[in-house]
Length: 356
Ligand SMILES: [Mn+2]
Image 1 (cartoon, helix red, strand yellow):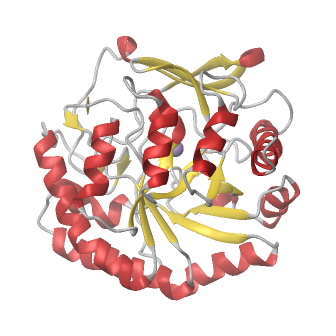
Image 2: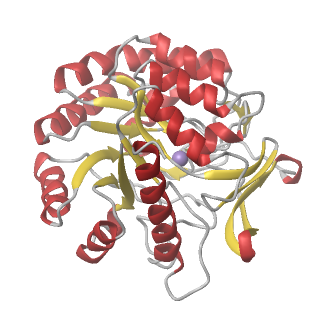
């Protein structure tokens, strides 16, 4: 098992890559869709927003040269590029919305998958979600008053419908008054199945695993739109839609441990045992739906040693990244939080692998 660090495009600097290596990471997950591509709304050091506000999308699909440049930059620092994420709302909104350009946009995604294969990047992470990450709040929720992310369904007084021109909490076109209205669970599953039936064969051919992130927060409906990957049964239904190792999960242990009515160790064993975990977002939480907050890796309800042992015992030998962490009180809150998580993970992985 291996340790990695996720970095947004604007954070893929030589210094941050050296930081990752210094903290014990051997792999990098590159987020090439920056949440704040319209401008630095948050200090670069934090890496995570206090609210993932919409931003106008004007980006172009990746080129092979761009992908290879990222890979080379990562490899120059002695790291491996394990995955690229995410699909850009500007390029696949009609796949999510069942819009008129759906098939054109699927062709574009297939081309992106082929480029990743050509560049030798083995995973593509994505979120099949309309409302995306929405409704969280920040506060001193982690140990010692460290700033972190929380969710409380009772505090969501108003859930405005998603405007036309926005998806996954990002704007891809100017907006008017019109909204996309209600979207049912059946509609979302049907759209997901249509996408997977086209994309998984292309991924198999390219030697790339598609890795779906569960819906965060894991509510069945948000902003009047259904969310598909919000329960253990839904995750199983997802992997069964197209039975292939190329149809895998971006296994956000944090989000999954926020779901109610499941045993996180049993879920790890189930999907590791089926070889459907592309890579893991390794973070801990206090509480579950409908009220939880994100905390330090050694602070939440999940016994993270037991979790790591469960991955190992069920054949998972891939990469773990910290996902997000609370911000530590110092001059470099994001770096300190990540260094703490990576150091903890490094020691824990070694203990598990040596059977201590
Ligand atoms: Mn995650």
